[in-house]
Length: 244
Ligand SMILES: Nc1ncnc2c1ncn2[C@@H]1O[C@H](COP(=O)(O)OP(=O)(O)OP(=O)(O)O)[C@@H](O)[C@H]1O
Ligand SMILES: [Mg+2]
Image (tube, rainbow, N blue to C red; front, side, top):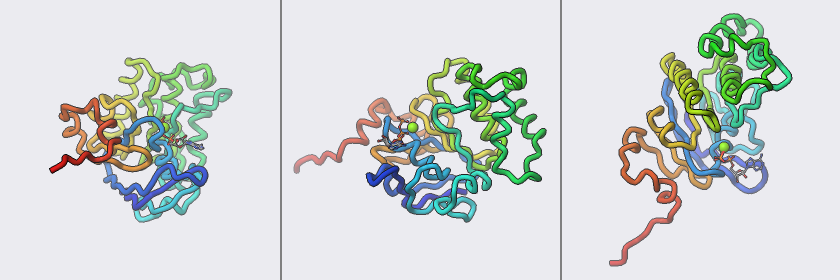
């Protein structure tokens, strides 16, 4: 479904993401993990067209995302839920959701059906549909951010740390919603700092260090690694050669 070939991305001249190649199959949920500043958000931004300098190819159902502006990428079904939620505070929950549908042609929107899908997934939002998004709790705002992405009928959801700063109960609620979406066949790339959330939730894990992919491994296998706590440290070290 998605095949990245030597994708690089940056904001200015200094490279941030460097020559990343990876594949995501239809229906798969993969993790993208790595330390702060590794370039995880930048890679998602390269795919969604929000990072200014992009190179390489990212084939999505036969179309190269790297050549398209962000609104066309959304219309193709690749939608990012950005880090830090970013709801439109002075607008109601429902109007925030409505904004998620604007990239679709009028006839494709089927608005009521989309609202029903989002409210079915997050009943809390249904109760608060007329409430201003800025007055919601952090967890509810994250639900709005995910709901807004779902309004455009995504085929591939790019989730940037959706659990960041949330209480365990809300983390669980959102995890279950994502689980439901996965069960419906939605393909997802999950950027996540916490390995204990990312690994059990995904089939494969991509570890990014300093802008490059340092490891791609089956998530279940990686979970059994006895030295998992040292993963980033280990991958960041140059290879150590023993003397003969
Ligand atoms: N808008 C921007 N303009 C310039 N540089 C940026 C911008 N956003 C990120 N960077 C730089 O790009 C590098 C990678 O940042 P990025 O946000 O992609 O990392 P990340 O892996 O998502 O980190 P975190 O885990 O902290 O979210 C960092 O050095 C950062 O300072
Ligand atoms: Mg980030």
